[in-house]
Length: 201
Image 1 (cartoon, rainbow, N blue to C red):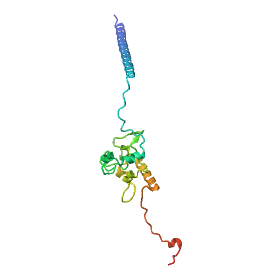
Image 2 (image 1 turned 135 degrees about the vertical axis):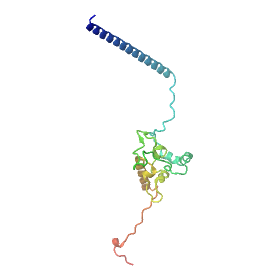
Image 3 (image 1 turned 180 degrees about the vertical axis):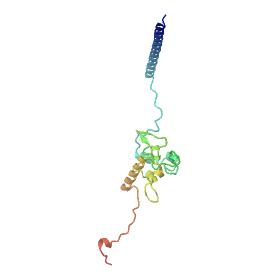
Image 4 (image 1 turned 60 degrees about the vertical axis):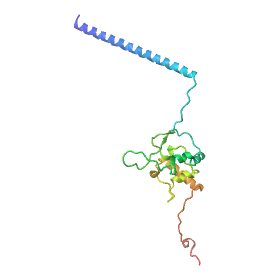
């Protein structure tokens, strides 16, 4: 046999062998996929005959459920609250997680995204779903007001996320406007002679 013919023959033989192997491999893959699909259908039919298993406990990170303010006010007086926080404020034991030795100037924007807690260390308000910021819940709001100045404490001290801090400030202003939280107005002395003229003695 001529060398050129031998080279062509060997090349054709190797192509035929490799394509036959690929065809066998493809057929076996299709066969295994068909068997897997059949097993899945059998399991689905068996599951339809039985009752569906009940869902386990609710997701602790889910925050889509709206808690009424009255429930939050009862929670602040309950034994569960006392067991969790004791006599401290809700933000006292909270510690922020941050990278490096120094904390960032601002806290995170929000702890809850798309109805779920999106961080491993949520702020004191976001981590406990029964702490509802509302102007009627004065017992909770007073924990975030300085007893000396009457101002709302900074988020760098309480560790609240920016969204919760804004909601806190709005709730405190609403409570003050409604008269539920008292606050001191600074006393100013006026010289009434500037307004009413010289006073006769």
